[in-house]
View (cartoon, rainbow, N blue to C red):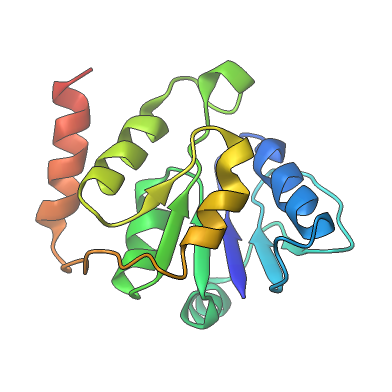
Length: 159
């Protein structure tokens, strides 16, 4: 199962869900796809989409997921890494009106550079990235606030 997490911010992220649907249509994604969409409004007969999922159910879904595809929110990334999940980060980008700046891109790059996740900047690369996850061995995330603080401090220092 693939779990897609779009967070709870009041920002639209149709771009990711459109790409997911296209890859289902092409037969690239064969797994069940469950989406926590937040404020993103997207209709699909191919994915199970929920606006918001209560904490216990979300925790259960994260445990069952083979892959988690998430926006670039630190909370969503870290929660999945703590569960030992293979994570693909697709940051919301300013140029698409998905966020006010590109801080999610910086966060995604840092987690990727540390070896924890893969990230997708060009949505056309989503299928290739999903296909590569079977052989991806992420660095084990140590349950330490220092990791997250380091990532955030690095972002602040470099912007």
